Image 1 (cartoon, one colour):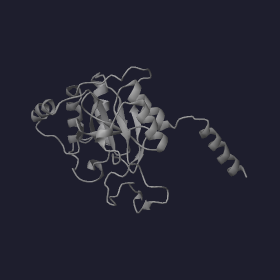
Image 2 (cartoon, one colour; image 1 turned 45 degrees about the vertical axis):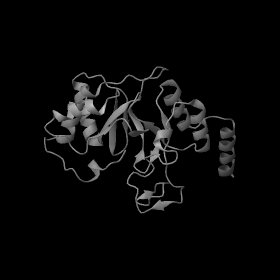
Image 3 (cartoon, one colour; image 1 turned 180 degrees about the vertical axis):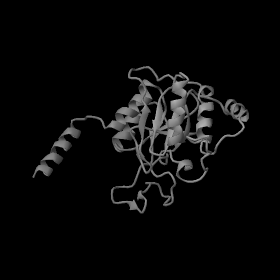
Image 4 (cartoon, rainbow, N blue to C red; image 1 turned 60 degrees about the vertical axis):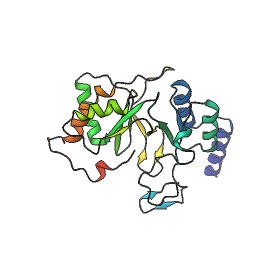
Length: 236
């Protein structure tokens, strides 16, 4: 009886029009920050389990980033239009939030979670001002100001080595934003944007890339980590 009453209360609460967390967050990104977003593909219904957990809702049964990518609509549909964002998340309240990176929107640099924690600690010791940082159980992503491919190419060309586990989300790319649930786990803010209506401040990629490369190349004892295995999986 208590369980039935609890369900009725939750249904009445939803009918009052209180937006789901994803809708609130998507509207903040699109309208307050002018970040183009769209709903991600998400995960299968609760009954759609595989041997590795809930599978991706896309047709690819071997999807390597379950739930963590655009599908329908495609990435080019990303928008800052409030009406479109409301319609998308009214239809799919639990849909992940996908940020279309590049152009006038933030770009990002992502790396394995352990290396990400080392990089943030190093940047903090140097007194480097950071913007928002997105985290999943496997990867951390530092949001940075928009950069061009030419700018990034020149920057990386000067490096002796750029680990393959370090990934760049520029023009034509995307990034999952909190509070999204994917097959890799919950997406959360490791460094949340400061509250307020202004778009979050973002550092230039030049300010952070050295620390990210160093953290990705060397382990805690200076040992170079392997480029295969869980740490280098493309897990957004």
